[in-house]
Image (tube, rainbow, N blue to C red; front, side):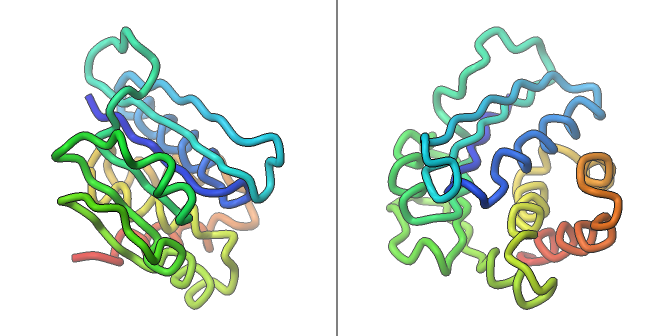
Length: 173
């Protein structure tokens, strides 16, 4: 079982990314539960989405000790990474999380910068992050996440979103 927490601020697309990840797991005939919460300010406020993916039935639909935390802002990293399990992985946007929390396994990638430089908009940051998350965790295959993204995003943006996934996937070796 994998417990994943994606967090940032409202408008960064972490909830959409979590929904896509949960749908990808279901496409692979895995069990999946997805939940989300965000501050009353919606855009700009704290935003958190969680996904549990398992080969077996999921009895408790809440993330207790995440195996992976993806943090797109300093506030999100500070607020939501403290209960990351000891051998878990913290993935951060290195430009937006300059003061990385102390953790033994941290993956730092300039996710927003990659989206802007390669695709012209920070709008694709969540999909770049999703590509990286799939590479780091192997929780679903790259082919499946491509299908899930293509199903969820507006038709006119599929090509750019596929590029965003690839950029994130290729951002670490």
